[in-house]
Amino acid sequence: MTIFEAIIQGIIQGATEFLPVSSSGHLSISKHVFGIELPGILFDVMLHLGTLLAVVFVYRELIWRLIKEFGSLCVDIAHRNFKWSEMNRDRRLLFMLVIGLLPLFLLFLPIPGTGLDVKGLSDYLGSDSDIVVEGLALLATSALLFAGIAANKRVKETTRRKDASGRGVKSNGRKKIHTVDALLIGITQCIAAVFPGLSRSGSTLSVGLLRGINQQTALDYSFVLGIPSIAAAALVSVFDMGDQAGAVGAAPLIAGVITSAVVGFLAIKLLKWIVTTNKLHIFAFYTLIVGALVVIIGIIEHITGNNLFTGLPL
Image (cartoon, rainbow, N blue to C red; front, side, top):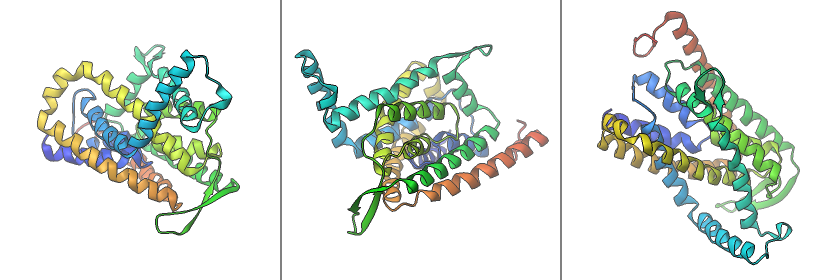
């Protein structure tokens, strides 16, 4: 891989990790288009690490509050002063994040008759030569976004606030996340981790909206929930770093990580503005169009037996 290819991949990863269009799906499709083949998933995980740096920087104040609240929680438990009904907002969010992360353990369940676990299936789908799965997953992302937007419009307006320009903005839905919300969002995140093209941020945000949660609250929860998920994936990949790092090259790896971090930061700011101005439907239409095109191209490739972009056999 060249540095230029790594930068292109970093841009794709940074732009699509947080925008509800699926970074894994776009990375898989871009590799298919450009004919990029890499052993293992180290490069993809390192790009995710770059976007992890971006989200940690944006939410650094909230993350620091949660760290301090965890310390306070430990003290209260030690002194038997903990009461579920009397939790403050940060402590409640801390518990909801833990509940939302529990379904990720399902990724390590074995799939009978395949010799793979659920995570292994995800790796296979993201590295094979077939892009039909990516296209169908993008269509599923579109359907979830449309459903979430429609559900949010039906929710009774609860608050009205001002945006950065001073204009009044509607804020529909509740700001409190319940246990069932966290569990359903966590299960959705687990499913999104399996299928490249099914956006993690888009699907978790949509499920939050379907549950009647405020757009900004659902978005912030989705972002923060992704931090330990991405960090865990990066940690697991460390054990396979040796040969894969040599195959990619140090310079392309560094260039990709830096690019994904910078572009990821900009993407978070963009999505926050889009949610504030109720323009989420842009991504619903985008994933619908791109998903349909990818499915059509994938079917044609199956018929011809060749990659339409590189001419290589599938």
